[in-house]
Each structure stands twice: as structure tokens, then as C-alpha cells.
Amino acid sequence: MNPEHTNKLKTVSNREVRLTRIFSVSLGLILFLSAFSWYSFKSILPKSDPDNGGLFLPQGFEAVVVVDSLAGQARHIAVNKNGDIYVKARNHQANGGYGNIALRDTNGDGKMDIIRPFGTYDGHTYGTAMRIHNGYLYFSSELMVYRQKLKHGQLVPDSKIDTIVIDQPPYHEHQTKPVAFDDKGHIFVGWGAGSNAGQVANRQPGSPGVGVPDSPNQQNPWLTDHGGIWMFDANKKNQQQKDGVKYATGLRSIVALEWDPKSKSLYAVSHGRDDFRLLWPDLYTPWESAMLPAEEFFKVNQGFDGGWPYYYYDQLKHKKLLNPEFGGDKTKEGKGAQLPQPLIGFPAHFAPNDLLFYKGKQFPERYKNGAFIAFHGATNRAPYPQAGYMVAFVPFADGKPSGDWEVFADGFAKVDPIVNVSDAVYRPMGLTEGPDGSLYISDTEKGKIWRVMFKGDKKSFGQTQLAAMLIRKNTASNIKTPDEIADNLIRGKATASAVYSTYCVSCHQANGKGDGNRFPPVAASEWVNGDKTKLISVILNGLNGPVMVKGLSYNEVMPAHGRFLSNEQVAEVLTYIKSNFGNTPETVTPKEVEAVRKATAKP
Image (cartoon, rainbow, N blue to C red):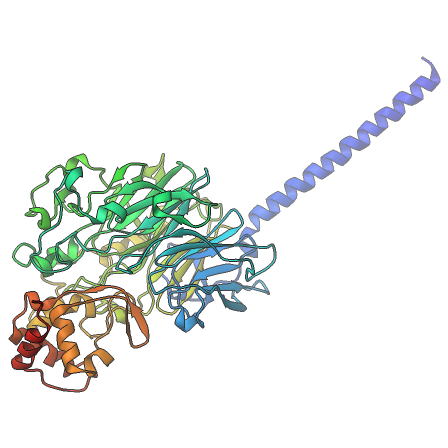
């Protein structure tokens, strides 16, 4: 062989060896760094709070409070890729007139060091949405859906606020405008109905429903442009409802709405109706009214009909039944069996206010693609303990639940039992997933935000680590099924006002403080301590929101109690209210009520 040719072969061979060695070292370094990153992941998470911020969690999970309170409180939240947090403020006025809040951790300790309110737009306490999608921050008021462009590294966006979806006044109950996005450029918007059960007179005892069940030509008028989900172009500005597609109907109030990228489907957890006992006292017991109807977890396909206002789901009987407003008697099914049945019927009045499908890798494998649901908590379970006030988890497989729902996080209320809504220190509201797979939970009462992390052994995680939470599900008064006799909080106790206990306590609560969002306080209220004639007129003739009470806006309906209460009953309950709850004592007489009734009577 030619020596020169032999030397060339040796040179090529040596170069190949060197390249092979370089490639091997590089590959080894990549594998080492990947393994190091995986196995040391727990060490780069911030330090947890010693008491997990007061939360009860499955074994191996820990929590840190990222912000203890926010002046504007909180509805839904979103976390950007760099860890910045964006919050939909519950109270614009307390937030300096701004609707949003931006937060940043500057030193990596898990605590937010920078808090900046931003975003000036009209809104009250119901506006809900806060989501990040394709580089934009989407948020909502009761009537509008907005967005702003986010810029890399910039905490507070300075881009123009664009209006994406427009609703029309008037304001009414259940206007929350949650949003979700599919993978085809659509935005889904929840459109709550301003009615409890589609009655002629909203929330009036014995008032019949409007419309005929299962008759498209005689449907309830609320279903024309409310009580459902509409689909729009996520990038088009100034869209009216008519520009969208009515994607689903028969849904009274939607706050928890989410697209699942795994099954490529839309899901929602619907708020069930209220006041079975108040509106139909001869048909439902206090226990049945506390337990029914279910909060329904649905997979929502296009053309979906949830059945409201004609039907409700009885999770105890596992049946869709006719509402009493439409001839129901607790047993009549009508065509309820032909409607979509819920994936799960959660206990009544838990108040599902956010839904999240977990996509991260930080948590044990059983949580992958499963659903977390934030239950804000009941307001109207009296005389039984208020319920909910926790975060649940539902394992998923093939686009549907693969096991029973579980208690994931509890302890928000910090009181047991919860007699009045205002007794609860915190109420879970919003859910979002951080870039590292941590779960963030927001609270409406103080604006507190928790970051939940997993720091246990993922391989050994199982039923042993879940055992304590199963015990809470079966024993905690805010979660378990109440005993009809033993858990009745007023059993054997004299009630100071029969009228208040029957018609007022579910909204204004036993302590008169309301719930701070839907139902205003009567305690130390300017409405109670002001003009007596005006107060009597409100009781007799009702009131539609929004109204300001003690500096906060409330949007619910005050029914016209004069239609079903006598002058003596109105006088009794107003004297009771004015003589309690820190109000200025004053007697209201039946003659005064009669005079106002005559003066305000419609010809």
C-alpha cells in the first residue's frame, strides 16, 4: 500500500475517533444534565411554608403562600412562562380602579416581591376570566372579554386593551364571562342566565316556569341569548354575540370552563339552581334543599343541552328530574333521561368556580391529564353547615373520569362547621398551572394565593398517601353528606325570627353579613339604617342590581317579598333586622308597611 495513502487513512481514522469521543462526551453530558435536572427538581422548588399555608394536602405535597393578600382580592389567575402571575381583581374600587393585578418574584424564594395593579375598564365583582393564550392576556368583566399583548420580560403590559367579545346590559346575576380556548383559534365564553329557575317572577315562592319542556317553539326566553356557551374567533375584535356560534345551551351559570388538549374537548362544571325549600316548602325538606340539586360536571360537545331550566340532576337518585316550576314533584323525569348525563354529580351548592386539566410532570403520574376543580363554597345550605370551600381532583382516562373524585386541598375556611359564609377566612376561586408544574390557587376573600408543589416520592405515591384526604372527605362538615338530624345546626334551638330563618338566611346569612359577593350584608347597613320607607319598599317590591352596599357592588336579585308576605310578617322581620346585627334599633309596624304597600302599588 502507498505510504502516503496509509497516512491519509490514519488521519481520517484518528479524526473519526476524536469526533466519536466528542459526540460521546457531549451525549453523556446532555444525559447527565437531563438526569440531574430530573432528579434534583425538588431541590430547585422554593421552600414550603411550615404549615403549607394552612392547607391540608395529600402526603408528599407541600405549599407556599406566594402572596398573603391583595387589595383587589382575586377571581381567576394565570401564570406566565417566566413565573409572573396575573390576577383578575374581584374589587376594582379597592384595587385603585384597576381590574387586574400583576405579580413577580425577583429573588426566587417563591414570594411575590412586586405587585402592580393595571387595566382600567368597567367591571363589578362578577367578572372572572384571566388566561394567557398565544402571547396574549385575556380577561373579562361581566359584559366584556378583553385582551392585551404580553411582551417578553415586561411585567405590566402597556399595549392597547382590545375588546374581543361584547355583551349588552343590563347587569344581572350569573354574569361571569369565563373563557377557554381550543387548538383551532376559537375562544369559548360562558353566558350565564339572569334567573334561578326560569320563573315568571324570579325567586318568588310558587312562581311557575316560563316555557314548555322539550318544546323548541315554546322555550324559556332566557335560552335565546343566555344560559349557555358561545364560540368566537379568539383573534377577532369587537364581536357581538350574534357574530359567534351558540355552542351549548341549558346551562344556568358557568364559571368553571376549560378545554382539555388531551381529549380535544370542552368541559364545564355547572352551578345548579338554588332555593328548593324557600320556593317550594311543601315539596322539599330543609335537608333535601341543602343536598339538591347536583353541581354537574359535563363534557360539552357542540349542540349540547344541559337541561336547565326545565331539569335538574339528583345525584342521590342518579337521575335528571323535572324542576317543580315545570310540574316536577321529585319523581317525574319527563325526557330527562334523553339529555346528556353529567360525568359526575357533585353535592349541591359546592359552587364550582374553576377547572384545570393538569399537563405538567411535577406531580405523580396519576395526576397527569386529570381535572382539578375549585369549589368556592355554598351560601345557602342552612340550617346545615355550608359546604365546598376546597379543591377536588378527578382522575381522567380517555376523556372521562377513571375514578371517584378526591379532596386535593382543604382547610381554606379555617373554621368547622361553617355556619355563615363570612365565617370562612378564605374561599378557593382560581386555578392555574405554573411552567414547572406547580398548581396555583387563588382566594376571593383576601386575595391570597398558594403554590402547591410535590416534594415526595413519585414512584411510591398511592393510596397510602391519599388516605388522610379520604378521611376528610367522609368526616369534614364542609365536604361530607350531612346527617339530616344530627347536623341540623338549629335543631332544638328557638329561632328569633321565623320569617328571617325561612326567607332571608340563605342569602344574608344567620349573622347578617351576606357573602361579600352575591348577597349584601344587612348588618350595619346604610340600607337598613337609612330611610325606613325606602327599606319597606325594597322588601315589598324587590330590587335588581347592581346596587352599592357598604362600598361594594352587588348584582343579585332581591325578590318582591310583598307578593307572599303579609304586612305583619314584613313588619316582624324588619323589626328583627333593625334590632340586631349592629343596626340602630327601631320598630316597624304593620300599619307602616300597609301605607307603603298602598303608596307603591301599581295601578
